[in-house]
Image (cartoon, rainbow, N blue to C red; front, side, top):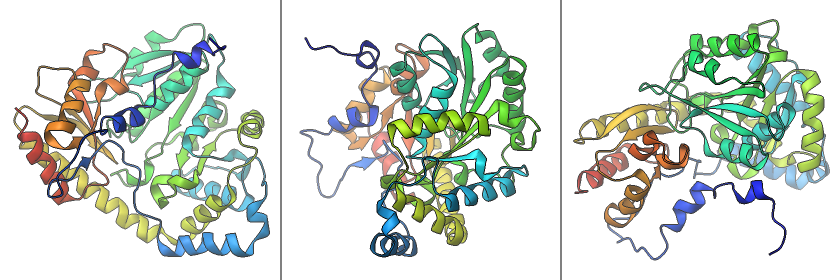
Length: 390
């Protein structure tokens, strides 16, 4: 047997890829195609203007094919700083911004600056599985923080989990997988806890563009000491359909960014140029278009809630942005049910077991429904098929 990193070997397989393997050998009738609610990454290309901006850069800007600055191009860092300063009412400087190869890399970079093997990090459950995977690979223990029935985590429960080697608390809002939007007061309480106990609050806002609320979702960036106690993450993938270009952002104090730069230089050298071109163009030209996308996603959220309200025994625990966290009525674990749904209903969804510790009762009873790529009619068909499961 060749040497193998035991931490990597012990990390669970990528859940989306595992679910796709359930489709092998399954044939779907032309009049009853697969309804895929397993992943909500945009499937349509970006708007034509953005694609033209990328194409023009590829043809006419030689530097678009070269290494760029490790922390990202100046124009995009400037745009992110200006956008977040305006949106949150605080002061974010370009020197507080790093551009990353997607938000997953932003998370990995953030954790690399905070914790090492033997340390631990608090993750609310259900968690975003790639966050848990990175902690496992790095030998960092996860302290699971159970959410309440409203799918919101409790800062008092979190404080009880803090030990001598706890380094950070991670929140995702709007949440993946539950869609829950964390109230500003709750986020503030978590920040107060982190600051009081010498921790950092890592706030992943990948889905912030699809938050149903108006105004700033929290006030952390207005606080005098945010640079010491907050790391904020963002993704351009959902807003501008740039998933394949891998463009994310990390906002933190300048001292921490000096450490982030070491990590990014080692794993990627610099973020892709063309994706950054697209993100800059999108921020300058697509606000109205993005507002329309948000409206449509929230309409699909409402359609999802309404459809499941009519299904006997099913219950939507929370829904927002791209996702609904749904309790199922069957006397079987969610992973078995999810595989059965492929064969009997032509529906691919991810079981709650992929977002929770092994054997967790919550994971066994729930599914994540990623509705953002399914229109209202498709959501209606989804409900009809689930109703037909005996």
